[in-house]
Image (cartoon, rainbow, N blue to C red; front, side, top):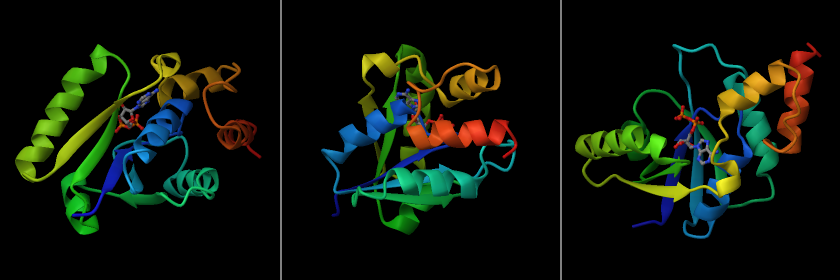
Length: 161
Ligand code: ADP
């Protein structure tokens, strides 16, 4: 069995909280598929292609991280990639109920699928992509919340460049 894992999420945009989880996971797994979920029900801030470009540029020096996209069930994507571990992040107890339900549902759908949770550094425990989008749209400084390339991309998008 390989020692690979899938980290699924919206990553709209990727934040320092996600980066912290990826760094921790990288000490344990040989390969991490960052899997951007294509959610047709939501209008995203960054398109799928924009997110892929951003994330590929962030991880270009990290051979363990592979940026991918998927639609449908993460269970089906995990079968397709022949991976049986899912990575998720936990910020606070408030994340737990939903993540617990999701992990058990996924395991019900594919019994060899396990979810591994990483607790983020405390300093990112309040951080979410939606908070970043909101602060940025209202003109606040997001420099401490996201990698520099993301900060620049948000600035360009908000200025319609
Ligand atoms: P989703 O829409 O699937 O929740 P997100 O991109 O918001 O997608 O989050 C993906 C995963 O990363 C989730 O498990 C979420 O709890 C986790 N996550 C998001 N922000 C942080 C953070 N600041 N610290 C740790 N984990 C986080």
